[in-house]
Image 1 (cartoon, rainbow, N blue to C red):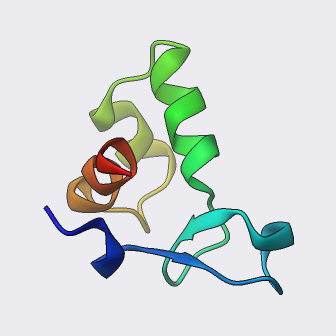
Image 2: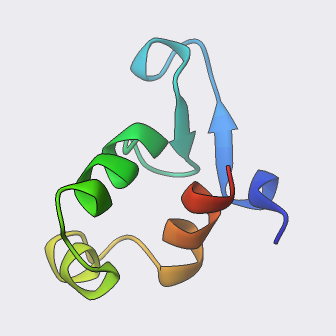
Length: 61
């Protein structure tokens, strides 16, 4: 997977942290949710603007 299709670093968004393109959701946010025990389906339910591919890109990052 080429995570650069889904993740960007923009110094004007979230203090330059890597975020999912088109959102203000950071890679750190997604990884934290997974570490806390949320499943990919849980995250998709809570954040319908995300896709499974975007979440997997965060893991690849």
